[in-house]
Length: 268
Ligand SMILES: Nc1ncnc2c1ncn2[C@@H]1O[C@H](COP(=O)(O)OP(=O)(O)OP(=O)(O)O)[C@@H](O)[C@H]1O
Ligand SMILES: [Mg+2]
Image (cartoon, rainbow, N blue to C red):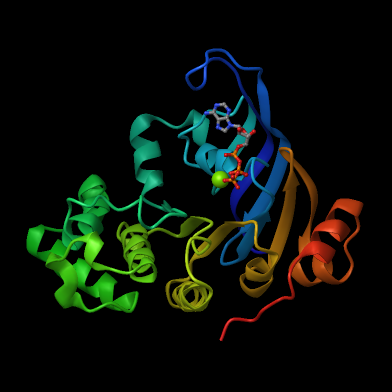
């Protein structure tokens, strides 16, 4: 197996304390002893229904959430043990594309500001002056299939699919090697979904990216991912090569999920 980029070892996360308007709620075991390894250059799919812990795991990888126990290693480095400076450097190499391209782009910012923001946050690594950042933003826009003349526009002038392309350009701006894709196409129309998936496949090939792809849509995961893990109530139920999981699921849960899935629709 190629070198592991990301290793998740026995990670558990229990949410306790207050949530929402009505005060204290019961603790929630959002992740239970999750272990996964993502190899360089692969598309790893994490599939689970709503509330199964997918976003909690993604946020834990980014250290926006502290696991209650377990370790997350990036290229063998325990992220919890890093100094703030090392963690910041490492964060340039792990970026995220969010589900909702409407909510995830600030409506008051221009496309240029949105796409150059990660270059500013990571300017010690990216090291570009203002003009070079603009040139780089224009390059990134054309890489995701949008015209560079659109830099002065605002998000509301774009369709959902175009906005998600902008979100992808932003995620690529710091030169990452690992992209966390949290349901990146599930808010889009089916035809647009296929275009964005094909863009992701093309970018992965061109830029040698590793994908950690989260979805509840088995058809999409089958199309994009080389390996898949199924998560249910915070626990990994089954994991393996995509074809093996789909052709010969080992667990009752996997069989039910796969037989309930809509016909696998291969995007054009
Ligand atoms: N900040 C929080 N405080 C308390 N409980 C939380 C918090 N965030 C998530 N949870 C709970 O943890 C569990 C896992 O949630 P999570 O958002 O990770 O699921 P998900 O798989 O991403 O779901 P979806 O497909 O709906 O996005 C759920 O029961 C959720 O209600
Ligand atoms: Mg989620």
